[in-house]
Length: 148
Length: 382
View 1 (cartoon, chains in turn yellow, brown):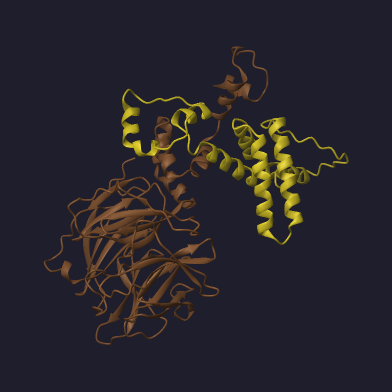
View 2 (tube, rainbow over the protein chains, first blue to last red):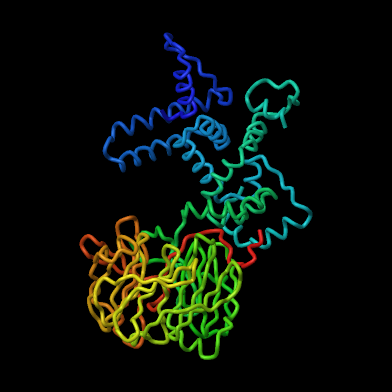
């Protein structure tokens, strides 16, 4: 089971010998909202499906997964990525976490300081002149950066 | 802070000003990312981005400069490049270059060389993103091409005549003590070792061997760094047989390993996929064997993986796209000069393709490096 946090819940349930005659067990996930959860479930199902289709061919699996991921990224707003990362982290869903962290890294790689601050909701807390000194020291790293 | 967290969970927050609109709310969520997830994201970035992002905020500057983060980032070893030293200049090439057409190299013009220096730069070694360079005569630097940082190694307090009797050099990393060392081995039984961590030189016992007659002043062998040790092939004094001398960088002592075959002229060393390689050094234009020690230290695990077409010297650089071997081959007809070409070789059928690097003629030293945040500065200021 990919959602390791949920698996843990099932294991605990079995250990407590709770008879679940009902097929609908409510598992509380207070830290995950419905929208990112829906995306993660789709991602997981797709991942398992692709894996099953290409049972022995690891390369094919990777290729198809990459194509699906590219398509998925087109539909997701950069800001939504945080929710997805937090959800994947809470659910302990490693493949999705890896993918979404990669996506954020890719999104910010060539961006300016201002863009990154806005993206992460950060503010400069440098003293007067401190930031200028740093910018001068690393002036070469500002070349070729995307315009905001 | 608590108010903001409640909002992020989508529960209506009556305590917050109602004019916060969706965009701002999403930003607030991003700043809730726990530290380990920020580290996960940042550790995937190239060095250039990370140096720039040190200017984002104080916490980010501290995080990116922290030795733990440097290690995490290094561990991913995502961005690899080739380094070429030609004459007085350094160039780097993207490791993932397609090698379909002529290769374009980026000039590293920020390396602080004395412009009056007429002599060539030699690459002594490369590990964890640090390069050790020698600008003749006998001045050494440790340089990180990704962060643009460099530091000059102080001169060794060695006895007179030491520098003239140098047999070989090496630069490597000892993981058990987290230290980088530059080693100068001489013919007399002495070895001078410089530790980057302590910023001091010390003299230790060397390896009793004969100076190889094949080696000339211009290109002394540089040891291959592997598994926390430097490796050279020396000829045993008196006996004339070759043996691999492995200098352990933690204990500063030598141990021996056997060579694959008897060779009058010895071997040069290299490494491929984490294994030690040997290439025979018989003089002249001839086919050359490349041997790989599949199991470290085990003499009978030596395997011949390739025989290269006639050349003067061959050095494997790295595995390229998991299937081919990138190497430098010297086929220069002019015997008075080294002439290195970049060649991509398919070990399955032995076919080789050579490439020209735009604006860089033959005759260069080549090595590989990984882009990292490791600092060459001895006091490792954060």
